[in-house]
Length: 161
Image (cartoon, rainbow, N blue to C red):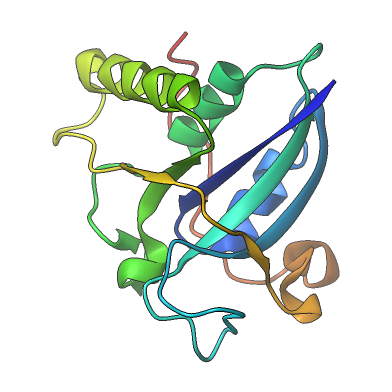
């Protein structure tokens, strides 16, 4: 059975490009979630995070394995910032769909903090997923279409598991 998870950790292009290659990931879409307006656009998405919706085969990977990789490819200790990108659109967030996911995410944040790999504590927010709005077509698979495009995402550490 396939499942979905929505994560935000800075510019959605870089997250999508790295996550799409992970074992068990079936598909990814970039978009906006967690904000104030319906039908947000790149030019108008107050309070929304740039996020990636990840569809995965839970027989080949798990919620925790995806979180593990997510915490390897962005800095979860910078508030509303990744690289040169600043503002709430670029926050680190896990958008959960039920209490079990929220609890698993809380446990994983504890694992990251206890690892002491970062000089500061994790500021990743846990937010209920209300609605995911796909981004405009030109943002989808952006780094596939523009291999020299901007990204601030890369593997910083090995697995936390």
